[in-house]
Every structure is written in C-alpha cells, then in structure tokens.
Image 1 (tube, one colour):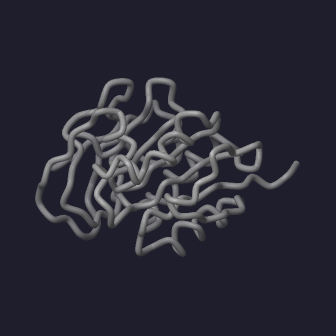
Image 2 (tube, one colour; image 1 turned 90 degrees about the horizontal axis):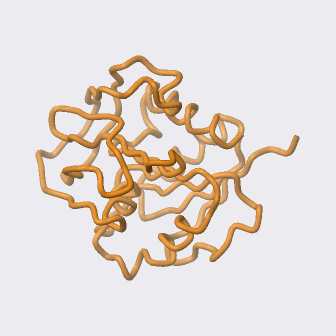
Length: 187
C-alpha cells in the first residue's frame, strides 16, 4: 500500500514545521503550499487537506477563494486548524467575535462519539494562541467540542468530511491524538 500524502496549506502559521512533523510522525508524507498556490484539483495526489493557522483574517474571502473552491470540490477529508477552521467557517457564513486572549493549554470538552476523538478522553487539553472565536457552527456544520470561552472549539460538516479545531493541534499530546483520529479517516 502506498504511503498517504497530505496537502498542508500554509496560511501564514508560525508552526508549519511542527504541523508537518506531526503528520509525518503519523505516517503521512506532506507537501506544503500557500493559500494563493493551491492546485485547482487534487487529481488523486493527496488523501487529505490540512489548513494551517493564519495571520491573514478569515474574512478575506477573495484571497481564500481558490482554497475554498478546492475544499468544496475535493473528495478527501479536510481539517482546518485555528485560522484554518475560521476560514472554513466564515466561507460557510459563520461569524467570528473577539474574545479573551488565550495562549497555552486549555481544557475542551469533546463529543466522544466522533471518530476524530477516538484516541482521547472526553476532556482534552489543547494549545491555544488566539483572540477570535467562532460563535456558532455555520449552516451545514455542527459543534463537536466546546469550552468556557468558545462554544465551537471543534467543528464538523454534516457529512463529517470537513473538520476544524480552534486549537493548534501540532502542540501537546492530546493534539497529536486528535490528529491521529483525523489520520484514520484517510489512511
């Protein structure tokens, strides 16, 4: 069996190296491109797409249009991390709001029946570095994890193909185990 390959879209994250290393640790090869350079089609080259965090605001819909078009037409699992989740949510009509600045480990309650959370307990400690929060899941999505400051810490499309995490899963052991749950969707 061929080794799986993940397309990592670098939206300006400070932790691209760590994110790619996590997927490689889980047995996947990775290729990284920026949002302006995403291919129009995957043509079977990739088994999953991961959207990194971002320094660019998720509301820049024109900038992210090629990325969103790829996500919507691809038939592979997609995972948005931090700003990547916000890009996905805003493109579906979601609304972000300012909140308290969180940097470090924070507890999140997750829906254990979700395959994404196969390898973790109902409360996970994940790494945050942000001040924007999704207030509710947009149409076609649902919240599958929540915390004191964020009613949508984790997001899933109704069909489960598109997922998102407010936290940076490239850090902390619970983050790795959540990424392992995502990897089981495409490996």
